[in-house]
Length: 308
Ligand code: NAP
Image 1 (cartoon, rainbow, N blue to C red):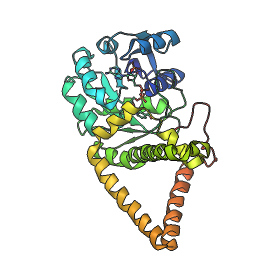
Image 2 (cartoon, rainbow, N blue to C red):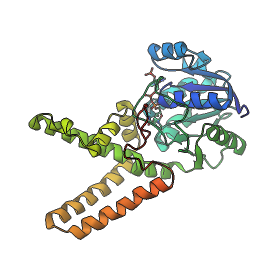
Image 3 (cartoon, rainbow, N blue to C red):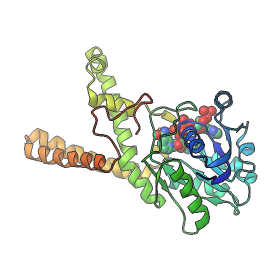
Image 4 (spheres, helix red, strand yellow):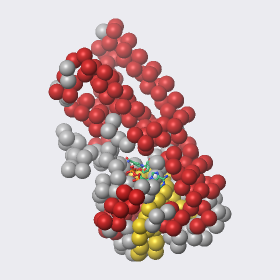
């Protein structure tokens, strides 16, 4: 694989950045990696592990001379980081991000960037419930989609280069506009997380009256919820605060469907329940056939935990 960017800078060195770094090293897509994180502890770990070639104290120092800058911080921290790096970016460089929400990130970041850089947002649809600089692994993006969100006036050459970069990291790359992205992700990722958080919260309440039974007899459905509900609280707080309209839209529909099932159960309408569950089962088969999950009963989990 040939070098795509001479120097890549990562702001934030958690799960996504460290996975990109491992995958990028394996593919040989950059000559030099610079990085920084908010806390001294993360920067020390990154230095000790040799995660980056250069670990800087500030984001402004990290982006100096970089051809690609990737913002890998929680969505709520994007504006602050963009404000800091704006004056220090190399003319002609590409600034991208990996935030789980796109419209809010574009609105937060774009105003702080100079005219002479290319801002091309992106979102890898891959993750685990783990976080931090030691949670990443090179295979995270393999056979998963990365959605790139260009604007109408995005420089075609810069776009092709970013696509090549993500493809080299192992991802299938597709384009999408920001609003559509936020709605699709609300259905496929954000709402399921909210439901898992709620279900685990309900079970936690129950535990108080049922003497640890929920944990003791935890069957696979509930265990899967607890894995999702163990996801990073900062990240998910920011996702919901920054994708409010889509959250409201999908939650409204979810509540309607839940009430439809509630009514069917109350009325003993077995046909409705059977048809409903048959339809959802077909969706699961479609996901497996599309190669986006495994049919194994443990969902193919490895030592690193399940990929989401
Ligand atoms: P993570 O493991 O928690 O890492 C976040 C990193 O951002 C940490 O290194 C943290 O530094 C740093 N950070 C936080 N605030 C900062 C600030 N103000 N300035 C500089 N650095 C800051 O998170 P992640 O899972 O990699 O997520 C990063 C981004 O990827 C988020 O926007 C998230 O929405 C998106 N994403 C996540 C997933 C997923 O499943 N995890 C999937 C796709 C996209 P410290 O370590 O010093 O606190």
